[in-house]
Amino acid sequence: MAAKAEKTFTFLVVGGGIAGVTCVEQLSFQIPSAEVALITAGPHIKAVTNYKQVSKTLEEFDVEERPSSVLEEKFPNLTVIHSAVKSLHTQSHSVETADGRVFGYEKLCICSGGRPKLLTQDNPYVLGIRDTDSAQEFQKLLSKAKRIVVVGNGGIALELVYEVEGCEVIWAVKDKAIGNTFFDAGAAQFLIPSLEAGKPEKAFPCKRPRYTTEEPAGGALQTFTADGHLRGKSTGPPEPGSALGPDWHEGIALRGAEQVSRKVSVEYQCEVEKIFTSEELLNSQQQTLTPENNGSWPVYVQLTNGKTFGCDFVVSATGVVPNTEPFLQGNKFAIADDAGLQVNDYMMTSEPNVYAAGDVCTAGWEHSELWQQMRLWTQARQMGWYAGRCMAAHVLSEPIELDFCFELFSHITKFFNYKVVLLGKFNGQGLGTDHELLVRCTKGQEYVKVVLRGGRMVGAVLIGETDLEETFENLILNQMDLTPYGEELLNPDVDIEDYFD
Ligand code: FAD
Image (tube, rainbow, N blue to C red; front, side, top):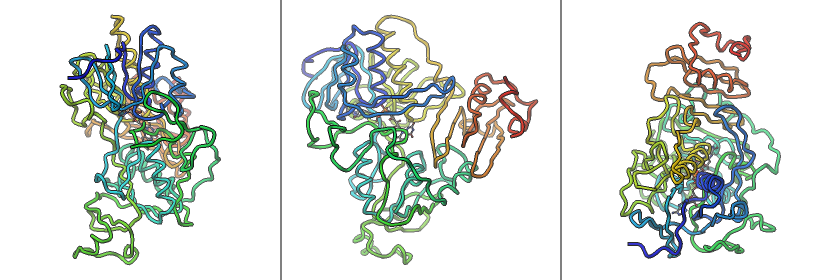
């Protein structure tokens, strides 16, 4: 049973990542008289800047780490509490924080994000990248490394292997092709030559505040005490920070100890069998190493394809686990198969008056045929915004409908320096054999793939400056029968925009 709350807020939001911040912004904007609080474990909050609606569903923005005072100045009704939530008592409508305080709520939204799914816990040679602190740690270790092993095939692994210079990278992927989370083997083939080519020069500094191993000058990176006061340098155990977002690696030099530009070898269709220290390796009988792997590496990785590689450290980039742990004990949340808090189409969990948004939640409503959840920056923003709207509508007893952004999956990103746009069922997700593909590819320039079902477009992958995103988005949304156009749809000599205008 929780102690008595020192204060009760109409709206309490947990997590200063993009979902939580967007949620409190929306609540403060919609009901300026309501008392809103944001409790967050990390010293900074994440702010969306330069937001641009590219088309009906595609959006682009930058993300900045900011002191929370920026939010409090903007919204006088908002209080930011810097501490980690230790427990939740849904019966008494209260949360308890790590520094022993208790806060009550009328409506609560959990936006505590996720943490890296590590290959092994507590191994100093295995690193997960999630937040600013872990990115700094990675940068520091990399600066002394000659070889690293990267495990995983999602967005983080893709970006890492492309960005790292001055260090050999062994990249272990469980699939037949790289980037399986985002695209098919054809697109992977298109991208592979970029890994072999030199890296284009980058202009520094870039648009976001960056992570450095040095102490910040002039208070560029600030830390706060639990009660929200500014302090010099953070001490004590690290608190879980917000996940990094688009372009997280820009502006941090991902450089190893060697003079090589980029050297990546991909090991396909394999997973990690075992991780050894050099002593363990010496004591093990069955190890046979190729000469280049023999030596005195601090750690060795045995893969399921039988190969063993020595390296300086291992990066575990195999996805995230929703951060639900502090909220579960004593409560009856419905938990989804992927371990997220299951939410309905109002972003409500199964516990009354408790909502969730972003990486911590699993969208449990019946999805539109063209949308799927992926734990991405854009969806964290959309869910936080929509959760805020739902919470406000419920307090005001106003009706609300599932937002249009959940109609069509859409995502813009950059891989290997190419613009990448993903729309709808871009990988034929859930379609079985009931679909056909049209592909157009110009080496080094563009890769266009269209997924058709019953002659109608249901998904697309656009790599390069194709300029097709808006037209394809419209074709997917209006479900026009494209059978009469056949392969002409991707004929580069036909100006497709004119065709369908
Ligand atoms: P988070 O950003 O993780 O925020 C969670 C917040 O909750 C943090 O402030 C944390 O301090 C706080 N918190 C956690 N536990 C507690 C607690 N017990 N009490 C109080 N506060 C707590 N997505 C893209 O779309 N494009 C990309 O290019 C991209 N690149 C990425 C690269 C990396 C290295 C990583 C790790 C992720 C990347 N993502 C990318 C994914 C994206 O960053 C996440 O989907 C998004 O940040 C999720 O936002 P969130 O607000 O749900 O969670």
